[in-house]
Length: 89
Image (cartoon, rainbow, N blue to C red; front, top):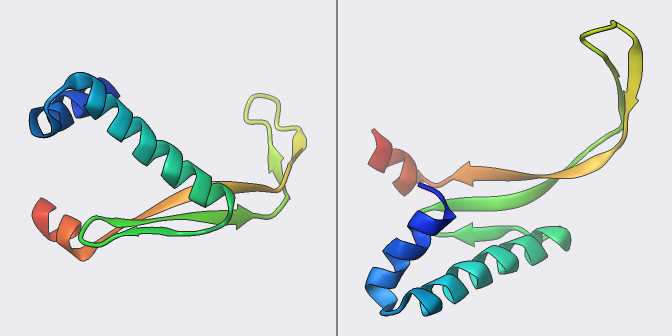
């Protein structure tokens, strides 16, 4: 399922595809904004999105074997909730 498929599924509930597109875009931007502020987003029964800081480190270029430095960064992380895990098993 991609974003277009998700919009089509939401449109079945809210009525129009335009409203569904706005709802999906709003949800994605709200989650993104919260992660930028280092806040976590918990959707009970689905899971938690959080921002995780990764320290700078040394790595290797796999083609040349040359050592490179990898900058520190923040990366998103998703932890599935119990209900989601149970639905898959």
